[in-house]
Image (cartoon, rainbow, N blue to C red; front, side):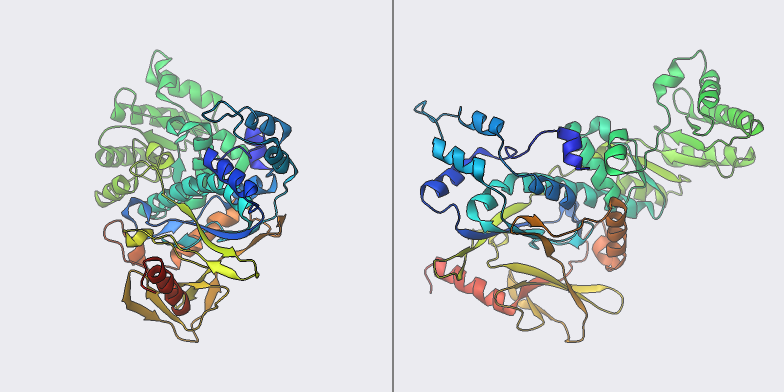
Length: 488
């Protein structure tokens, strides 16, 4: 079932900025609404100062586009909007146009779970300019946040070095949708499970959880609380041991663990949620081992992220499972990806593509023109470079050029294997893509990360993976820049 429909049970055509509708009105008034255009969704800089990002959110984008239409209720609301003269903002003819409009765009996208880099189009939208414009905001909202959290998740899981990571972020997430989207993206990025039960139901993510401090505080003693919990949930016993005194809490868990064993069950482990996690985990490990519980896991939580986990690993902490909440679900130190959506071409009256470019005083903000595709080249062990080329011009050589420094170039041989990353999703508004399961997407992310050199995965001063423009596209972009600045 459509996940968005399960969450919202409401059409989402109005999930847009007002200026998309006002521009659409302008196109309609000028007779340009059906003019064919091409837009690309991309980001300019990796989040978290990192060297890679993980594309995420495409499945929700597909669900949104499949059901894109304006309802009678939507149009009735739009008819109430007024301008500064208190007259209707939109003519009835425009609202009638929106009522009859059916989605007709071609959509190409990079599959979820793919490792991606700045300026690479994650989604290309081609079709009537009014439709391209109306879907912009929702696509950015969906792709930006999930790509951000999937990337954060991948970084955290890299720091855990194979230990399971659990996502515990719902209670601190940015609202209901933020919590659900974060749980989905975190799973794709690599976490083993979530505490978010609704996300588990909707997205088929494994769910895990134990008990809180309040459970312990409800009883006369910590020991009684553990004993009661063990009787209620003998097959799910992980005891939170830091409500009063952590070391004593571990001893209480061991005592109840022995009772569990006598009844044919096994204590799964303990959870640490405060204090010196390195020291306490080692003390707890010694106590558990000496008591005959070498398989009991030590789970840690408490404002963890990739940096804290990496530090605890270096300190020799004996933590086996990591519960990460706030700093994952909110992408703590960088709350937005900064993805953008730019016009790159318009079809002229003769049916030819007229390339468009956005200029800026900052070279990083100068957009790329054309109908872009990303070609990823492979070496013997790793991916070696990505080429952005224009599908109309076609790749002329296997040389890529850094658009910010044309002396920085990389040449791939004719025998280097390659893959074009953007694949067809919609054609003339009809879905032609079968979205993989969330588990397959997660596996793709894992495989992708393993096929990049470890240098791009460093947290500090990561290696810059080569991404550049194919020579013809580079030359076309240069021509457009010079022309726009009056030098050609």
